[in-house]
Length: 150
Image (cartoon, rainbow, N blue to C red; front, side, top):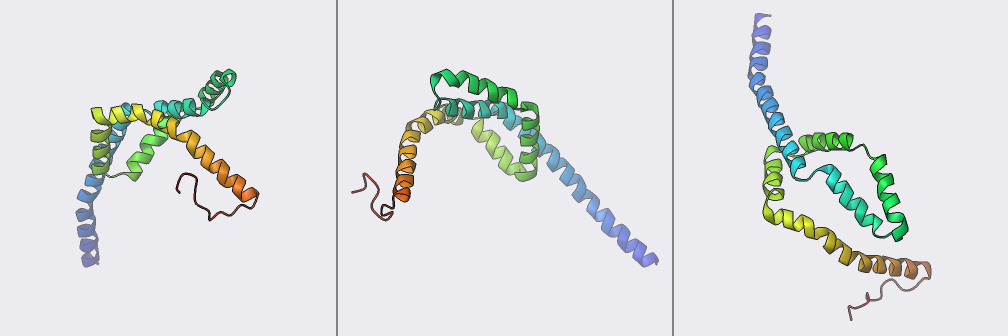
């Protein structure tokens, strides 16, 4: 019985530093996830996406759509969920790399240019999707070469 007790004690005693390391790592990951959200807040990312969608609506509907989405979103809950998910999903090294990259001037420039990039590509992507759907609907041969690839 004493042997069993000592064995259990040794196993438990050896696992305590692992738990302490996990706690320290979890704390560091949470700090980095919060830092990441200071760099790229979830609210800002949602607003960018909503504005991009709104640009596809008639001008008279754009402001109403943006206001409706803004009213419907619980940004505090979204931010908390986002931080918690980052802590659970990414390693400390990955979060540090994200903070280092997204906090850099180059990444900030990329973030500002991405909506413009997407806006320029979106009409062509929609055109290609519309063509593919029309071809499928009307039974046009799907194996023909895409437009512009000749």
